[in-house]
Image 1 (cartoon, rainbow, N blue to C red):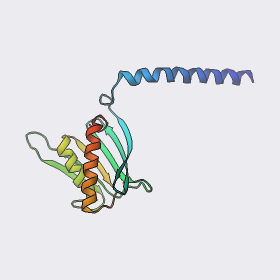
Image 2: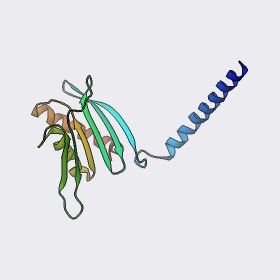
Image 3: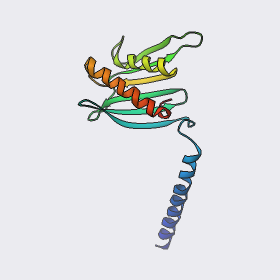
Image 4: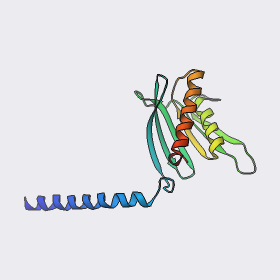
Length: 150
């Protein structure tokens, strides 16, 4: 029984040391200097509530957009800028409709705007008006939290 108490104390001491060290580590490195980061948010556009999940990687960003009740991947696309001096965007769809899927269109827009590779999974059914409002809300959110995306 004594050995159990010692083991629990030792684990408790280790956990306390890790908690004490964690804030120091978090303050010494900013979100933009870390090679990987994840982020989750809920965006509300009109009556539509959207789950936004972001994985920021070294040189690219993955964005998942879906409803709050069913998170599934129906579409998945990637877009990235070409090598200089070309200003074209190279893109492809991995999963979903071939051609101009919603994921591909959004990945192209984001790659063009931020000059970075974007993987996008856009799993929402929206009409043209709601989609335009959603894209404006997403861009606004991204500008306010830029370090989470680029």
